Length: 172
Image 1 (tube, rainbow, N blue to C red):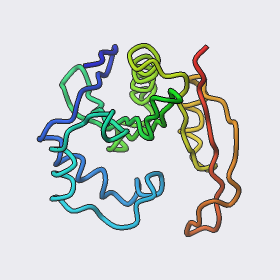
Image 2: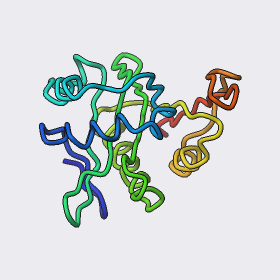
Image 3: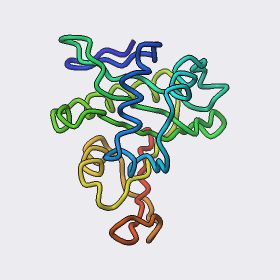
């Protein structure tokens, strides 16, 4: 378990299938996750019950919990784990919008960065953020990530084309 002041990160447990089912099937969250169709309960349960071995699956998901009441409020992921080049992608979701903008994602990201650099010995982390996702851009920039690229008009949305920014945090 990775402990912070307000939140902690823990491994996925079977009881996380229910909240994850809601978070993953909330259309508000589909844009950031590139979700096209809803996930079935069975698929979420299979994912939750599968081994979270980063060396096998090249990813790991942690549940973000509040310390004061152990409430699961979201997830933070490492994906595209590459031990040869010592890098991984990062994704974060505060599942219920009522818990957003309270600093929980910021603290969870700090914990994940420390874990990634200290325990996994990664050289860098990266993320992809849509140009209109100002909250995520601020979150990652506040934590030292720098914009290093842009995919122009990369994603088609209901409002037209949107560019995707590429951010990196390289260990100093």
